[in-house]
Picture 1 (tube, helix red, strand yellow):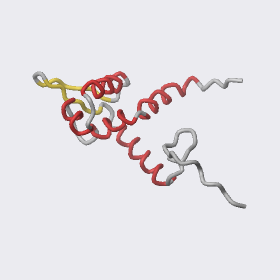
Picture 2 (tube, rainbow, N blue to C red):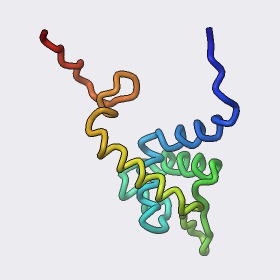
Picture 3 (cartoon, rainbow, N blue to C red):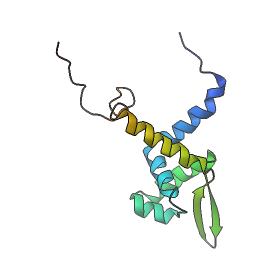
Length: 119
């Protein structure tokens, strides 16, 4: 039997999905330190221009970043300073839970099987 999520959760789910991609999260963390151009991001993150542009478009569509044009250059910046608070809070949760999130069998990043508990 499928369980429907409360309709009010859909925006939060979309927000966390947008933050759940490693490339988008890296871009956001970099932009949180100050404006950046695509060329800055490609160099600093060592990603292809097309990859950076695709993720910037996604973040813009989500309303998390925007850009200002200066001549032929575009400078990307956060649109919501509250996003910095959210990222800081996430870091605090990760620090408090230790490796529990990384070891999560569904969403974790651990490639090793869980240790067996001897009785």
